[in-house]
Length: 407
Image (cartoon, rainbow, N blue to C red; front, side, top):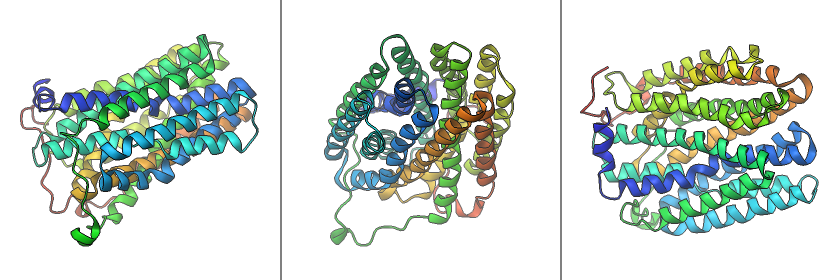
């Protein structure tokens, strides 16, 4: 099983940029949760906390496409240091504003600026894999490995930020997120050997290849619903743990959810699937939606843990096939932008998911707020089934790992 992963990680420079990406991606699983914990501690309202976290994620969504274009045009070496410095400074200013009791819209605007300038580390790493492996069939394995890294991030990040915020100080988790973002992004920026070359200026390269928006719009829609699932479940889990008098359990519970996804990702990436990415994407999204249905009926944290573990098993397969569909569909010269576009959909979904869940928590309690998560999951699955097969991957070879058992 692990031979497939070894084959890609032993490529020159691969392990170094992937590990740098792991550290640089930790903020994506820490900042929104850290903002919820910080603002709720300062105001006592999950609605207010969700609004500030939503502002951050909206900032990510609005500028993700611009960030992707800048990365493709000027290269990671130039863009990453500037972006992460601005994002870190803005997030630090947000923390100070909340601690000083600043009223709206000051914390919201600062949080939005922090999100808008947050570099797309996941897209950068996947673009490096696509550049390094090009038409190698092991690219599927590399993307699967990165999905596992994503889940590792979502295991470590929530646990770190929750433990630091609840046992030390609410700003400690966010300060750690800033440090990880700076370290990982700067380390990635100096690894120029594996960096995709900047795209030539349009005056010398001719018109840019068109984006397949018919496919991307559907993928963005599904991605947005997935974001609402993730953002909503994060806030609902924190609130349920708080209601049960065990706030420190929130991080480990979210980590258990991510652990299920990690285990599924390891297995999924080691299999040479004969079915299409699209078919697997549809069924994975459907399985995720069905796995969320029990959540509103659970009031015990001990029962919630195994249910989240089982629900997590559908996350990695959904995200892996989503990324594969983007890679097969988007022109190579615009891959970072294409990944950023779809991931911005996820960021856009996280914002309203967290905000709506926060409103329901204040009105009806934590258990009822999980219905928001269920509805988002069902809509995501329905959207996935609207994608037409003939429009995906036209003219691009299938990406299959050659050294794993056939499914």
